[in-house]
Image 1 (cartoon, helix red, strand yellow):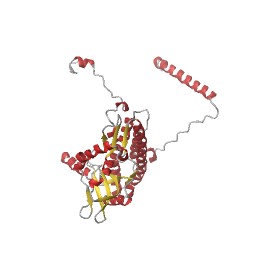
Image 2 (cartoon, one colour):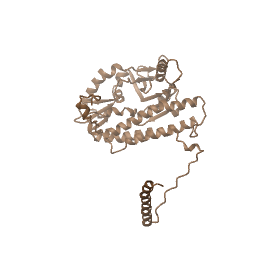
Image 3 (cartoon, helix red, strand yellow):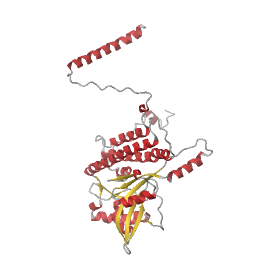
Image 4 (cartoon, helix red, strand yellow):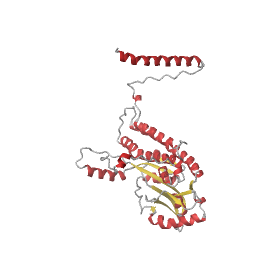
Length: 373
């Protein structure tokens, strides 16, 4: 060993001895009941258990995103943003990754992945883990809703509207909402319509007053409408009302001559997975075709409001060719991904402080010309 190497090794040896001595002294003073660290099990390099499943790993990542919504050290509206992001992520996961698994199951693929699970086994495990994630999103929303109200931002119900609120909302509905709505009756003369991907639709059970005939109807929510309508006034508080509550208030206008027996909001996700052939003659035309097909893929997942009658839920599921396992009942708020609409710019105190990067002075001295600088 050269002198240089020898001299470099000596302090390191001395440090290791010192640390070992210190640990030995600590162990002498430690109580005899201190538990020894658990041994790390050996990894069998021939077992598929050494791999982490790709789909479950992604769900674990989205779980960490959701946990940020529970982090009390974050500003309140940023926690709401994390909740919205987790829901949006999960929608995309179903449209692409779960759709891919369902396609393999439908094609009869039984080949196990590197972690030793077939597509059917992966799909069953994904549904279990994702179901818990959806339930936790609802619980966190109910918690954040209370904290938002305490901070002066509230999503109110129809029973909390004042006379002035109802007057303003009535005008807003007549002028901005009602003209773009298209209620649809469902009967042999009016077949079940196409439900767009990620689209909200209100399903209704009605009775025609003149002959007591039962009628089912749908009210698709146009994508250009905001999910939450901001109410004026509020004495310094920011108040919103959900669009479905506005529909409930104006049901007599939407379906005159009918009695409402039951209703519920639902939201469907379609297979949006695409496979690109690298040897295609015209990639532009291929992508145009794939994007059109992506919007009209088969429905693979649907969330229904708990208020929807069971008969109406089965009716919709049958027309969309959905199994019972592909339905999720939502107890509180549909469309958690729309929570980002509640992040109002006037409440900067409830958001992260904006980051403003420092502009290099040398470039500023040259009039912004980095080459001259």
